[in-house]
Length: 135
Image (cartoon, rainbow, N blue to C red):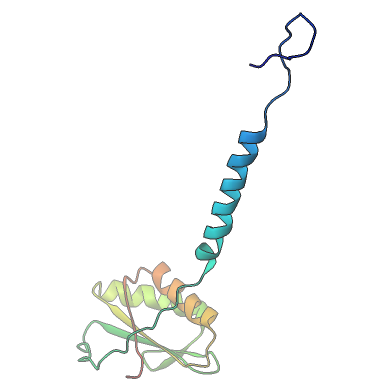
């Protein structure tokens, strides 16, 4: 606490706050944020590896779902509507609890359609889902 130093003999306490240290700290924090902010917003560039050809899975315990370029579903080589897909997958899973579903999607298919089929498979209880792609 400081005291006024004027010619008067009475000593009164100063009621003003010294803001210089506060300004110094705020400027240091501002510089830190300015320097670190660009580092936090940079995207990570990932170069994905290419895979080698692997042996196909055995034919038992498999079901296949294909989505063609027009978005039509084909389950085990039979056309299927998306509204009946969940029940068919539940039936297949009930018949074989070790069921693995192989999903094939045309490159022209929107990601939303593939995500919808994956969500339906998960909702039907399918725990093993494989993606089929070209090498």
